[in-house]
Image 1 (cartoon, rainbow, N blue to C red):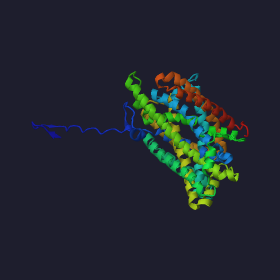
Image 2 (image 1 turned 90 degrees about the vertical axis):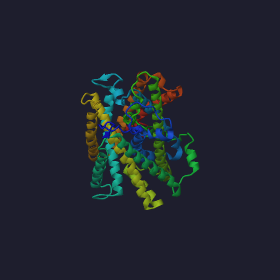
Image 3 (image 1 turned 30 degrees about the horizontal axis):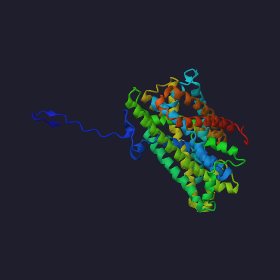
Image 4 (image 1 turned 135 degrees about the vertical axis):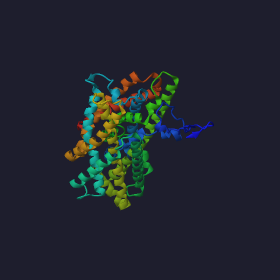
Length: 477
């Protein structure tokens, strides 16, 4: 209390409020203009997405493709990871301008079946298929852990795999107990940083082994040629690498939770709001660019490992054999410590995907329950509670599916069919939402529109190829 001049007491004056960090701003605010400081601090959704994108496909499938084609298709890795980001950016643009997540927007794309659009129902079907794939990733993480440290039995034995699957699932659920975006972002940024450092380190260490590569091979791999007999491999790589339809959808939720739409504010028709929107859309594009760079570096590293180590020997191992074969090769050439480094990289890659899925999928299902009228999506208390409940329930279901099926290849195929079909629907939705929810001012230049057209066409045909490939109806299947 403070004594006044007349002897009375009064409450002390309030202390000056501390400046609020960018990540905690609640009201509309302009985007930062300096890249090095505030803008970089505004990144995050793309890195969370990268943790989900760089997973079993890159570790096993991309390495296998490198083993089949050698360095000849190195250039295609860069193109294939870049071509789909334009569709991703367009969907995120709509979300930031309208303050609504992707599944909410998909409901606007008719025709409707009951309370939902046909695209929402496709997502539900795809996610049931993806449960098999997520179970396979939990199984892959358990396999790498079992090789590194067998528990109650030999490496890769049923008992060891089961125990590690329970540990991996439990750890993912515990990490995400708060359900808050900042916690998820910090965990995934650490995970993707470890992924990038370890995978890049493994690729850069190869020249010091018997399986080294030189500048001539790298230059030859950037010659934009598809050698005879590798067309099928090229199509497979084009479809597997980079973001998929489910990641494009998930990215919009991370953009909302980071605050891009909140800081842009509702459309009140003012020039100030339009400038805020342009600023945060620019931040989003930079965030996507950083995500693409990280995904490309990791994918290139795995491809180089396959092309340099496995291709000269004619080896194309699959599944857990890929992990054991590569770990033994590194051990034989660099020493026992290299096996631990490789297995640590494999665990970092696969476990961060499990964490990312355990964080994102409950949000999408919570939104779907809201669209169905089961819960009130706009009530933050109900939304947060539902997300936490699903975070505890869904990962054990995925683990149970793995322990029941115990066939990662089949599980990935089932997920691939669902993902391919949904990819077609997302391309349709993006163009509908672009012309119904994005004002002309924010649609970008003619060059960006041309890039979106090319990206949409490529993504559409990739969706068709993905379904056919999963059904083994493509040439050479």
